[in-house]
Amino acid sequence: MSFQQFHSTIHDNGVAELVLDRAPVNALNAAGWNGLAKEIEALGNNAEVRVIVIRAENRGFCAGVDIKELAANDKLILDVNAGNYATFKAVHLNKVPVIVAVHGFVLGGGIGICGAADIVIAAEDATFGLPEVDRGAMGGAAHLQRMFGVQKTRYLFFTGEMIGAAEALRWGAIERVVPRDQLRETAMQIAEKIAAKSPAMIRIAKECLTGIEDGNLEDKYRWEQGFTLQAYMSPDSAETRDAFVEKREAKF
View: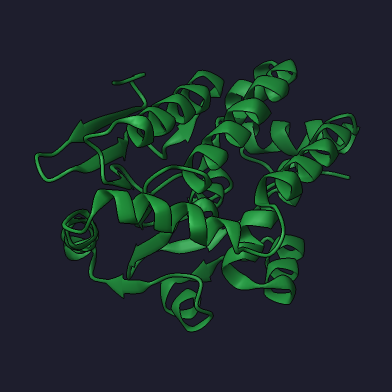
């Protein structure tokens, strides 16, 4: 299925490969996020699928939401919020393991996908960040915290700084770092190893492991989204989006 922002393939070995492909930076619009959620959920509900691999084409893995779309119509934030929530939930609560293979920038919604996933593989050039404060929004910290822990998450969220793949590996936020040209192959090899096991046992294991996590990721993210709406009511929020679109420094 394709919404012209991603496409998916189910391989003979039971590995489903979903590829984000909305040039240049894979910043999905409202329709894209909602469509992505439905596709990820559908793949997990497909009896032929044993593992899902999510990766991307273009300059980076995912730059999050389409800021230009929101700058043109800020009322779409409700639809975008719904799509983000549904996508991350579809990954986290999927019936099969979800492996994410990232390269280049991993921002906003890209963090949400990684933070909801079971395994993250990163290319050497991958960088992770949540510039939400600089975009007049909230959200994604619950998923970043699932990767990095409390204090590192707060540092990254407050400063908007990026963290590279090597440091992310040291923090235990990702499974491994590989050269860019080995990213897809590595993710697919891990997926094949899992897909070769009993699909019934792996599905049981996925549900079991999700159930022993501390806290409820979806509830935490929903809490954040309430503050996203509060942020959007501030004139500072509109200024951040306008400055981004106009490629200038925001003025407060």
